Each structure stands twice: as C-alpha cells, then as structure tokens.
Image (cartoon, helix red, strand yellow):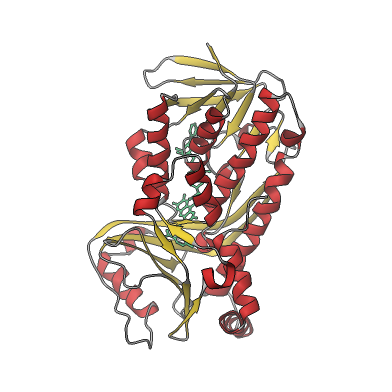
Length: 393
Ligand code: FAS
Ligand code: PHB
C-alpha cells in the first residue's frame, strides 16, 4: 500500500510530461505504464512539434537534444494539380514548427525522470481505478514482479491513451462523447533515405492523399491514404514506393522521390473523438484518453502537451495551495483548444483526402478550397497560425 498525491496512468507524452511538471512544483506523483521502457521509446508516432510545445520543453530544461537534433521548419507545401504551393509559416505568423519525433520526446522525458530519480513503474498490469467520486481515489494494479499493489492518491490523471482504462472507468452518464470516423486511414512508412525535399509536402491527388515528412537528414517519414479496411500485408515495399511516386508526381523539375530501405510500416485508422467533460470526480483525463484528431493537422501529441500544462497548474493549485478554481475549470480550459484543433484537423483532412463517396461537386469544392488557400494571404495565414500552434492561454 503506498500513498502519493497524483497517480498517473500511462507514460506517453501526456503522462511523462505531467509527472515531470508536477515534480517541478513539488507535487508527489507515481507514473504507471503497461509497456516496457524499450517499447515506448521505439514507438513511431508524431513528428511535428508546435512552437508552444518546443518553448515549454525548452523552458523546463528537457529541450536540449531537440535543440541539437530537431529540425526547425519555416514553411510547408501543398501539392495539387502537380504543382507546389508553399505556405510560408514563419513569414505569415512569425512562428515556426520543429520536426522531432514523438519517441525522441518520450526518451528525453524518461531520461529526465531517471536523472532526478523520479518513479516510473513499467510493465504493470491489471490496472483498475476505484472511488473516483471521493477525495481518496485508489489505483490497484499488478507490478512488474507480479505483486498486487494499491496506490492511494488525492487525484488520478488518466493519460493512458484512446485504448486505456481511465475513460471506461467513468460510470455511464458521467460524460458525453463526440465521435466521427473517416472513410480512410494512413499507411505510415519510415525509410532510411534522405528526405526528397527540405520541408513537408501535403499532396492531394486523384488516387489519394500522400505526405512527405522526415525524422532526420537520413530518415524520411511518408504517409499514404488507404482504405480503412486495408491491411499492411497488401502493401509490399515496392508497391508503397510505386504508389508514392504516382501521388507525389509534380511538374517541378527539382523533385525526385528518394527510395530506400523501409524500417517500419503500419496502418493507422483515422477518427475525430472528444469527451466532455475531461474529468469525473478526482479523475482528470488528458491527451488521447480524452480526444483523438486525424493526424493531418499534426495536432495529437501537441494537444496532449497543452492539456497537461493546464493539468499540472490545476493540480499544483489544488494540492499545494488548496485552490480549486483551476481544477474546476480544467475541462473547459482544455476543450477550447481541443475543439479548435479538432476543426483544423478535420479541415486539413477534408481539403486533402480523396473521399471515395464524394461526388464531382465535392471534388470541385475541395480544389477550390486548395486554390484559395494557395492564393490568398488571409487563407494561408489562417492555415499557418493553426499549424504552428496558437499561443497557450
Ligand atoms: P499515448 O497513447 O501516446 O500514451 C498512452 C500510454 O498509456 C501508452 O504508453 C500506453 O502503453 C499506456 N497505457 C495504455 N493503457 C494503460 C493502462 N491500462 N495502464 C497503464 N498504462 C497504459 N499524432 C500526430 O500529431 N502525428 C502523427 O503522425 C501521429 N501518428 C500516430 C500514429 C499512431 C499509430 C497512433 C496510435 C497515434 C498517432 N498520433 C499522431 C497521435 C499520437 O501522437 C497521440 O496524439 C499521442 O501519442 C498522445 O499522447 P498520450 O495522450 O500520452 O497517449
Ligand atoms: C510526421 O512527420 O509523422 C507527421 C507530419 C505531419 C503530420 C502528421 C505526421 O500532419
């Protein structure tokens, strides 16, 4: 039986950053993670850090390697009708993004925990939450050695992602869900080959969406829109490269898709999902446990980071100053940014993906939106300010 102030479920970006922020404020927390450390440090996911994310990680002293290895980007291209249209992110907003893999942020946050001797319990199982509507909620679980454990807390933070145990622990009627599925998924590829362009390229093509991104000067990250019922077994490396060649075709002479050994490939379904409120009693939800966005807007991880910045402030006020106002407004505060990111991610997805159920009228609307965004400073600025990340409130 142990006691702590905050029991955190899940060591993804949300749980790790929350744990670190709380300890900086002198709030005691225990972090429980089902997977092994090696597994979560290798899990390939997001790649784009908004400017507020970069500034926060730098501010708390966890941004050193990101400074050295991250790649600041000042623009991106929309490719349609075979032509590139650059959105000058920094020129339009004075802000930028940094391309730095989510697993690198996870590694940096775990290293920061180890440096400070902060507790992370990996390979736990049978996690269950109890007494959420009391001031002494509990977490029961089996630890890595197979021992039954109980954690008595003042607060539980559910940072265990979309498939975690926290959200389902809330009794029926305790929250409202908003769910929207898309008729497409993303096939993601990590390849050992230098990027074919210095910036990201979002492509709308009759055959489907494609995205050119990267992880380093030697590693390219690419995505293809596929049918949600498709399986990775249908996609040989050769077929992937051939499809990318077709969708990334362009009239601009200086683009050649550089192929190379595929290091990882997987298919991720696409959905928009939000729960309201992001709290029940002494359980607070953050990150993918509370919301999911289609990755077209590069918002998922950044939203998780924004949530836990709010949550660490709310819990520090509650547990160290006995002030409840931030905890009471936590959900409303987060949901402002969540719904903005949901809309932007839906907007980018709708503008760039080829919907098999869409009619010619809808295809024309899509092309009109792209041409307007590429030719209007006002429209390009709106895309840019959402993409680089609106300032934290
Ligand atoms: P996470 O899912 O990252 O972390 C939750 C953690 O909780 C995991 O480590 C899990 O093992 C653990 N956990 C689960 N159940 C538990 C339990 N019962 N007890 C203890 N621990 C438990 N976003 C982008 O911006 N761009 C992308 O390209 C992109 N690609 C993605 C690809 C995939 C396959 C997925 C699933 C997501 C992708 N995302 C992307 C979104 C992703 O980056 C998330 O937004 C981000 O991981 C959110 O972080 P967390 O909320 O910490 O959740
Ligand atoms: C990535 O590099 O993984 C990435 C970039 C932009 C997105 C989604 C994913 O919108």
